[in-house]
Length: 457
Length: 131
Ligand SMILES: Cc1ncc(COP(=O)(O)O)c(C=O)c1O
Image (cartoon, rainbow over all chains, first blue to last red; front, top):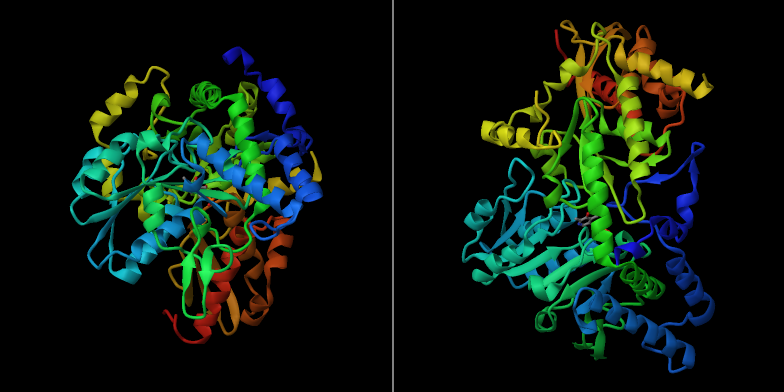
């Protein structure tokens, strides 16, 4: 299989990768935020609007029937990709909407004092909906802690599970640290107290084989735009028997079977959860993206990204004063967060942009985690199957130049002294991370990469 | 060296060697503001005599744009009347920086101006009187 994986050929499928930024060829390393789209996906959108555009589930004319068929088939294609049935796939706008749907619909049957368990490494979209529903309904949200190496602390997770825990919602892969969480194990633990187990699969489904039946999760959420699909289309997976019981989130047309002035009956799955005219072209294009990913092979994608990540960790490790966050290469996906000395991540990102390199600088929608790590943010490079080692070289060269550019002279009245007064620099977590046994572990690291959770003072 | 780079040099100069950086012991008002999204923070302290900003100092941390803008701003507001400072707006700050500032970083650029103007507003309202 792997001989068939040819990055040069693959790159030709992505017209945007030929773009010049500041006279330099674009090096797109912000794939955790959104991925680029192959020609096939772009063509499918154009083709839909040029040949098949009609509203679905309503018209009895041929074009509407064809649009309906394509849109329904898209659910089946996406379902098959994660080993689910078509009726278990609800199209939403994005992972955020999927998680909101779950928060609203699941919490409606919870009682004051019931508990929800999340982890400290969640994206805002897997925190805020639960937190706000908890406020409204008197629920308690707990957060399983993370270890100094950026992995989930399973003991903490276990200790927070109890017979009041109704919902457990966990990211499969951290978009900040790249950590891959052991969702199979977490699923068993959650079910042992009869809690509903939800996986935020936004950063896993695009990058590795995901089998919802094997994980045995009750629900999963992910976004189409992070897997070569268009923006505005996302997915909620739910076990059929649970989706049947779950009350709808949005009401209106298309989600009903029958309406009287007094009451309504809900449509069958998954349409019960898709109120109003959906993003038809988006759904069809997402199916096209899934077919494209399948053709490349998700295993190949995973393998290529792993190679890139190992290479990136090694090359980034050459940069003096760099701090790389998150676990060692085997436990992480193609996401690497780092800080170069004391340079603000925005400055790093803006500087490398001059060399055509697109990376993210900031808190990556995980402000509580950033606070825990005692950073205001990090720079983050995140890979996809169309990236190359040469692109990592461009990044590393640009970072080295950034370090030179921003270096403070010894005697200048500089601002770095002030960094220490930042109120977040002292907390229990940072103390815990200084645990010397952890350091020895890091020092053993063959590649001499500084992988740790916090900037040392 | 390109035009753009020359300007950048000026920003880097202010970032690395900020003017009016430090804590003013004898001040009429102070104001702290931050931009949690970027993690930029600025505290401005100012001494007012009559209706004139006699002295201004700042401390803070953050990206080069936020810190250089603060340094540049403190240079130009010294000696101005409070009313004159209240007239300043985001365009003036961007002009000072001399580079195009995108929609995300414009918040970094104006942080010190917002802090200063809020400080003046509080000073007028008598909230923030000190020695
Ligand atoms: C882990 C994780 N969850 C949820 C989201 C939210 O995705 P979207 O903005 O497409 O809803 C993201 C996107 O950054 C993510 O990385």
